[in-house]
Image 1 (spheres, rainbow, N blue to C red):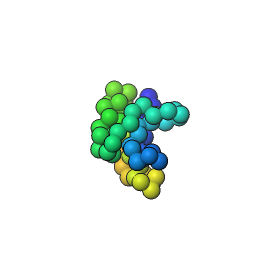
Image 2 (tube, helix red, strand yellow; image 1 turned 135 degrees about the vertical axis):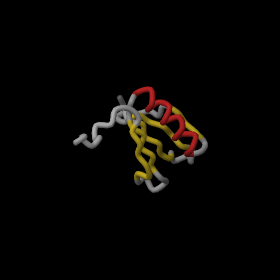
Image 3 (cartoon, rainbow, N blue to C red; image 1 turned 90 degrees about the vertical axis):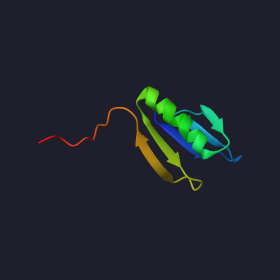
Image 4 (tube, rainbow, N blue to C red; image 1 turned 30 degrees about the vertical axis):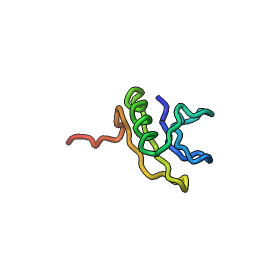
Length: 74
């Protein structure tokens, strides 16, 4: 279960990279394509997608799989 990070590469392309990995798992021309690829992988792994903007700050996060922070029923 590896979180998938979407970020812009210095050549202007968008990359999907698993947390802790040194190489990108895929390269895309636009951010939305990279995000879609990251979501597909995250759904298979039950992990999280973290989308970074051009400024490298986190723009969005979403978890696919078990949510550990569900409120407890009363």
